[in-house]
Image (cartoon, rainbow over all chains, first blue to last red; front, side, top):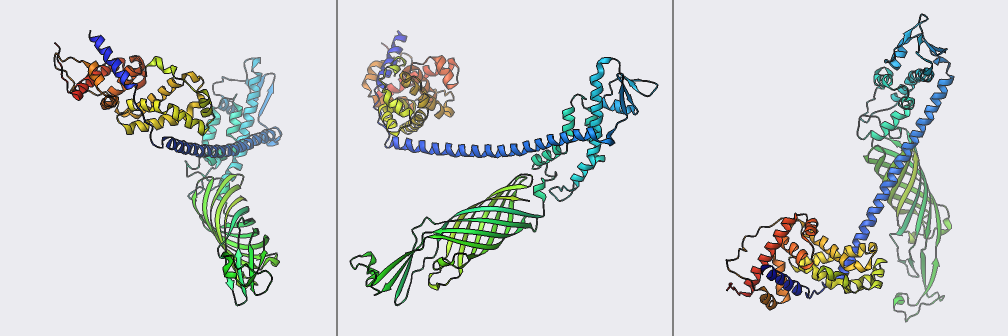
Length: 432
Length: 191
């Protein structure tokens, strides 16, 4: 009975609630579309960031891999050196499965577990014929130890040129590198590849380069510690705007400049930089700049009778009784400039540098026939924010968004001196 | 809508295909066709209209984004239900702690003549009462009584045990019955 009532209750409720009159929210579809668009944008940005991260990590991998290739190359060199170096003749000979050693401690260093039998001729007899392979490994092992000893002075020479981040040098002299000897002594003789890798100088440089942010007292990569001159090639595309468009007039003339837009500027730059302090650098720049302009000059001459501006034109009412002559001064202006800059590095990690730069250039226009509108000589002051990324072997790529403001220094037409603004993004390759 | 009826709604394949291509026109048609259904479900599950509209919007965003993965068009309504319920559960997840409401002890001999009372109530009045149910009760009530899910399925959906689902449903019904009586002010006693 109770169940039946319950069932009735449920059915009644279900029936009632199935007839809900659900009016849709006002502008509901529009709101949904807006939110979908926002989500698409967010996904796009995330995707872009992921791609950038991927590209960044790929770059790191390529550099790391390059080091690995260097490392492999060095190993091959070492192997060849081992084979031909006369100074590496070891006190060892193999005759009839007997390894003769003048210095038995070497055997024990290689593998202390091997129980050797000392013969009367101070040689070690291996117990059976199957140990030919072991003999070969012993020979290789001994050679690789000799390699390590040979390499040490070079590594220490290399380390002496390396400076830590706090300016102090790190002593990597062979005497203090007992760690490597211990590792070598405990290595399985069959793992010769690991042995060779560990003995390789490049292994250390990889370690330093990739972990220096964590172990800040380790030396920075070579491209970060160079205090010498560095040079940089840049290509700087930019958008070009006129800040001052003077309208000048006298009793007879009325000049007006019109700019339909779509002007652009592109420059090729070569610069040399010198670090003044750890953060401040001074640079000398040479630049070749091309500007494309769509400027138009309207020259209106009173009562010249060439082209009378229509009286009924309300827009041109100002020019009534004047004649109008328009000259399109579109075309390229070529400039060559010399300048200086000062850079301040305010963010830095082991690969990336972010800096701000102030610069000034003095430009000479090469095609002076366009000088009427374009300044013959121009002083351009600029500021920019730059990002450099070391890609290894002293090479650095960079990006440098910036803004510069050009002031005419001399112009044959005093009436039409124009100032201009250039927004640009430079892309550069440099080498320390 | 009972479970067995969910697959019987007529489905316009062209609209679905248009939505799968991401066409705005198709989405608009879809919204017009299925919006009332989605909204009615949201209203039942939500505590008020504002919450219902939020869930409605979230549900439609997911529908438009995921519809390209819908393989069987005949299961569209059932798929929409799943999306709405998951949105509701997510929306009220923090509130689905099991609520113990103590004020629904019915006096002895208090019999419920619900059929007549419910018939006397308008749909909007009944909906308002359902919306006043505590969140946990409302979810279980809707899922079991209206959608026809088993307690096992409900337990899996909202992360409680089957026994909890049963007890929540029992309490929800008691609570609702009492509120219905209060709303109608018709206390009746068993003869």
